[in-house]
Image 1 (cartoon, rainbow, N blue to C red):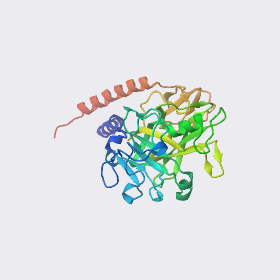
Image 2 (image 1 turned 180 degrees about the vertical axis):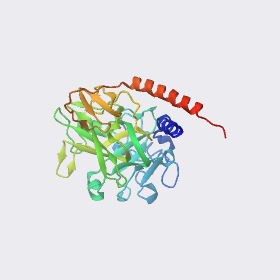
Image 3 (image 1 turned 90 degrees about the vertical axis):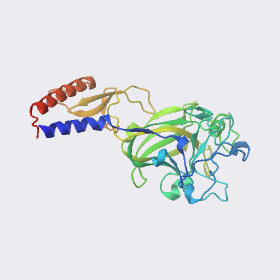
Length: 336
């Protein structure tokens, strides 16, 4: 009886003490633990680096990753180690650009999720570097395996200018047939993609115009996440669309978020309901059952239909069982 009680209490503690960690860009450092500094005067036009990480074009070894939250999150930067004399970069950099311009280091929200002038990450996706390395130029690694919960995504200012007004190199103005996609994937320990979702920065004539919360719960357990971009505006040498996006507020959980009642995906606002069938937590959506990893559960024809137990009723039953186990533990307790 005592073993059963201990096991039951341990199971409860796994849920109670789950830790939720949100990426805080105010804690950002390079790989040598030097705090991130922002440029005060540098460049002009589309590539003005004022209020941008001053090592954006530095391809030194200590700048391959940006660390935040004491190393819980590691954002890739110039994994190619090729800035071509300080003229090029890829991966992520940090920005506080708040001007409403077409700057490649800006976002249409003019600041992070916390408000105007607060830091946010700018991602520049390089298809060429991705093909050369064998993994995305834009990855965020974790210090442990975590369950990604959500991330905030915003349109980059330069990208918005290109797809709305054109005039940036060979980029065309988007019409209703064009799409700009951000593919977010869970990574294993070898940096290989294992599960993916697609978020549309532009689709069906609509464009992202501010911070949007994108659910990552279907990605499952991951050693990190990667970001890739695709566009319908392609030329002889690759994408004509500027392949930039803004990111903030990446949040992960040490345990799978099984106590969440409602789940939303990046490509749908339709409500899901979590239910329990035969001791397994599943998601009911539009009459179909799915696992927590987004896999559809095939229905089996049986004479007796399964009974659905509501989450609230399960909590009630767990409370009753806990009281019974505690009662038996007390009456069986023998002082040494």
